Each structure stands twice: as structure tokens, then as C-alpha cells.
Image (tube, rainbow, N blue to C red):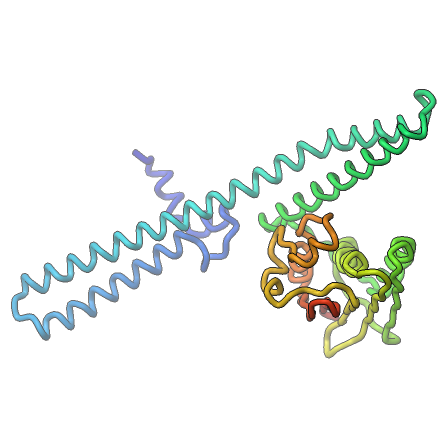
Length: 316
């Protein structure tokens, strides 16, 4: 039997919603209250209608009681189902967070050990051994990126993603990022062009998180271009927002896949044919960051012709 304290805690709707990291409108307990109000309204309406068409008060009472029992049963089943789903989602997020944290340390130690062995400080390294060490290092780097993405997703789902407020020029961030990606673009036979409207104002947001969004968009644009291609980055002011777009002439996204593109772990079929690497978390994380920063992220795409991803950030 549940203690009175536990029962009272379950009646605290805001606390329960916070536990599951859901808004009140999505919370099972709030849903139960709404369904309860509907049941009361339905029984009252049924009683009014019943008294008009049924002369026997006992028959009316039986109909009302039966209707109320059916509706209450349906409400309890639905609420329990939503509560179990919310609890499963919460436990999944906690599991991902714990596992990701636990994997970080051994992976860091593995990376440090590989770098030490490759340095030759512990003995001479043969050319063939160096190749294997490079493969190990590359895979450990990919694992670290995946773990970092999983931790970010966990923070997003628990509403714990911090965004510090700082003034900066968005065009400065993209200029630095393009300089970093020049070698990768050149190796991929991709030309990057950057056009920025003059005298753009500063924006107030978290430069490290916005940089993560820019990295995801630019990296995707370069990776999903077949043969030789181009990526065009543009920044302009539109009303009271800064608008940034990244356009490419890559493989594009099929109409069938476009509605799923911002879902976690989703990767389009045509993309999988050209690029096997990737976790399918980049766009999900990017959209969450831009939304929390008060902006919007969206895209336009046509298969085999290319894509344009764009986002806006408010000017304060």
C-alpha cells in the first residue's frame, strides 16, 4: 500500500512533469485531470439527455453509472500507458547519460596510449604498425564524437543544455570555421564560398554551441557531395534576425525522408549509399540548440540536386 506522502507527491502535477521532463500539456497526470473533467462533463450531459428520453430514474442512473465506469476505465488505461512510456523515456535518457560518462574516461586513456605508442618514446614503431595505430586512433576519435553527441542529446532531453549569453559576430565564427575546413574541402574536391552582408550587428547567444551547429551543417554539406562540388555560405539580416544559409549541390534528400530528417539517429537511404559514417544526431542537436537560442532551423532539398539548410537567430 502506498504511503500518504507518496500519494501526495503523485498528485503534485508540476513535480511529476518535471520528473519526466515534459510540459504540463504532455504530462500523464495532467492528461488524467483533463480526462476527469471530460468524464464529469459527459456524465452531466448524458444525465440531462437521459432524463428527457427515459422516464425511469433508475434506468437513467444505471446508464450514467455504466458510462462513467467505461470512461474511467479508458482514462486509467490511457494514463497508465502514457506514464509507462514517459518513465521508459526518462530511464533511457538516464542510461545514455550514465553510459556515455562511463565510456569517456577509458576512451581518453586509450587515445592517450595510442598517441604515446605512435610517438616512438616507448620504442621504434614499424611502418605497418603505424598504419594500424592510425586506424585505432581514427576509430577512437569517432567513438569520442559519438559519446559527446549522446551526452548532448541527454542534456537536451533533460532540459539541462546550458547556453551562456555572449555578444559576438556570427560572420567571425563562420570565417574561422571555413578556414579550418579548407583542407577537408580541398581533399573532397569541394569549393567553399562565403558571402556576408556588410555591417551586420552582433548577436547574443552561446558561440560554442552555435559553432557546433555550423560544424554540423558545413560538415554534412561537404561529405554529401559526389565528385567535385561547391558549398555556398551566406549571412544576411532579415527583419530582426540574422539569417545564415549553407547551400550545396550534393546528393540531396528524398521527399520520403525529408519529414524524418531532424529525428534522432535517422539517416536517409541515399545518404547511406554515399556516406556510411555518422550517428544521425547532428541535425537533431543543431535544431535543439537553435530553438533554445530563440531561432529556427529548416531546409529545402531536392534529391540529386542538393540542399540548403538555414537558420535564424534573433538580434537583441
